[in-house]
Length: 180
Length: 201
Image (cartoon, rainbow over all chains, first blue to last red; front, top):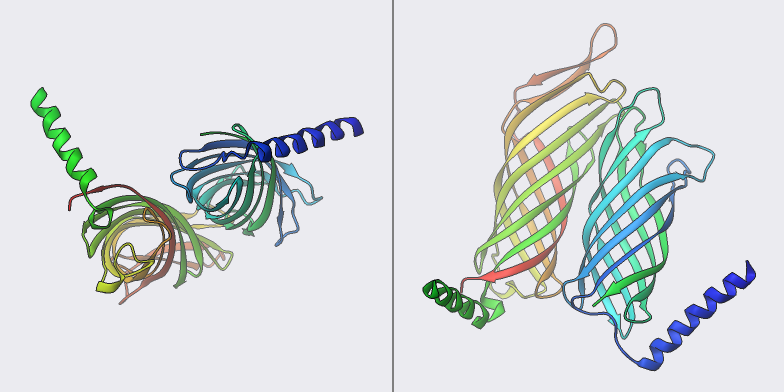
């Protein structure tokens, strides 16, 4: 296990060093990127901690603006209080980027919807409108790979059977792929 | 055939040759709407819009959104709006591509409302209607192509409103009431928009 982590850290450091030596810029207008990762979240109103398979597809329409679509597939809840049968979400919006060399800090807005079913005896599905704010950082290590971290603050309410404030904060991090 | 290619070439040449600041724009965007003041209470919505600019000082917004509101943990109120607004930019010195681009707006929309019992969703009533809206807003032009728009508007429903009360068995019942003067909701909208292409002079 330790050796695997050591190898992963070594690869990461090597990529970063290579990127700095090459002195190339790997992000800009026309960049298209995609990623998938596991995203934990916290719903503060009920102290729930759902986690998701998070997928993202993003296109840079110019040096500062990208359009971004995100999907969150509900996988489970880390808390003891399991209230969701499922709680999937889709978001679409735009991010504004502050790019410095291969460092890419961004903030964005993404309206979205959730498709939610609360655990109960009925099979009532609610479609809930959502609003969200993104704050994140990407580091482009070479022509194809980048590291990312994103924090997303989401606002919404599930109004079906048990009214529930589903606003949460969630975090995603990992390795993504991009083309320019 | 050559004639059509030649006309297309001339049109393309004219479009490319224009100063971007003087073009009219077609934009696409997504919006989050908050219903912040109404008989129904606070609600949140999701939608989208496109914009067709008519002149330097006049724009049009064509939108659709879906808003849900929780009424006292008893009733779910769902609104769907499909409509359009005319945006007028009143300040000569704050036109595109100035960062702040304030505007006044007025328009019309088709309005669907469904109210249902939260505990018993099969107990519900819906209606189609019409509404007018007017308000204020501003574009924040972060780049020449991308903007965030903030908008506050009051929407007046021109149709019967669905109300609810409890019958003798303490069960929710819905019924339609005639609209009272200026009944509607105050909507705050934040949207992100991207100018896809320019046209005209």
